[in-house]
Image 1 (cartoon, rainbow, N blue to C red):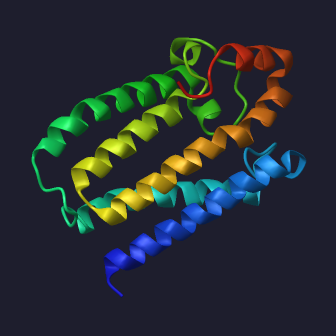
Image 2: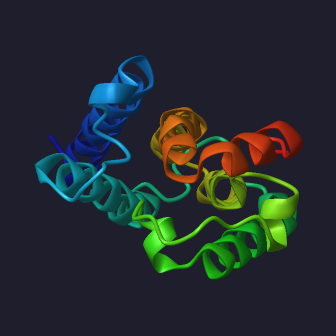
Length: 183
């Protein structure tokens, strides 16, 4: 098995575990493993898997670059604006929310900046970024792993929202009724 294949299967396995963790947390919010009430082994396991996935993506892009059917340079022109929108959502979301809140550690309720328009600007930004990189990379392996990542990002808020209601009470419940989950 090649390095590319090994990395692809490791990425898919890690994402499968992240998906299961999110699904478990949605199904059993009282026994959730994400987000955690405190830093324990599940907290670190989920973050380790998440960082592995994020770090393996660029390696897959390089290793499987341009192996797909769409070799037209038009893909760069199409992906550029999508990438820029994604970075704008991601950076402003992270800057507004702060490092602790971004990491799943309670550090204050935030409803300003991009959070006035979407409850999850970072996930929206990530989805745009992964879509644009998938277009540019022209790789079926990258497309699969990036789609799986976007799927995890779609599930994550469903696991996070009960925790956010616990943390911020009616303030978050009101916010959830007023602001869309994504766009």
